[in-house]
Length: 255
Image (tube, rainbow, N blue to C red; front, top):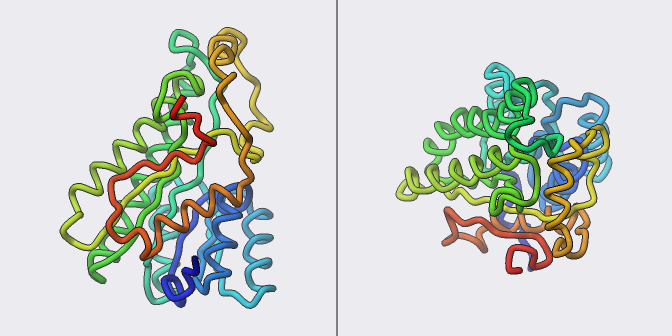
């Protein structure tokens, strides 16, 4: 299926676009003619992806910073609108993993950091993007949730709560703006080839509990497979889909 006509010239924001699922998503949108704002906390990663898009004839801009900071979130949206002339798609993908800590072992610092980046940042970006989409009378928002948003046995407490919250944000926003041309959906990836866990040391007790339930994890997906689901939900092919959570998990959620 070709989505070229859906995204040609449209402004697309992808957060966490410096690597992993975000990078694959930004590249796929750009290959379909979208103008892509690459948002990431890592300057080198963001610049590398923007240069890759431009080397292939596309248009890209970057914003680097902590997306849970309101000023940065607003800068992302303002830069996209001013640079591209429109904001058609927002992909809230940036996120971090927790330490697999069980509830009694979660520190205040871990809780605050995970909730701030995984849930508060998407809220701030969505709130900043909506006025622009509403003014146009259309827009698509796709949030990256997780299998951990569908069950309690896929991650630690902080990450699990943050991803359940993303699903709540998705559904609430979809309901609030369903009559105003805004579609909001989420994907729930299972195991995916990314670097999200590279700098994480897992809690012994919590990880041992979660590990009991990993036998049904299934095949580990390539980032491009997950990105394809994001692009689909943002496309006109999904024009009657809103408030949905699409597992991208090799059937894990069905087990």
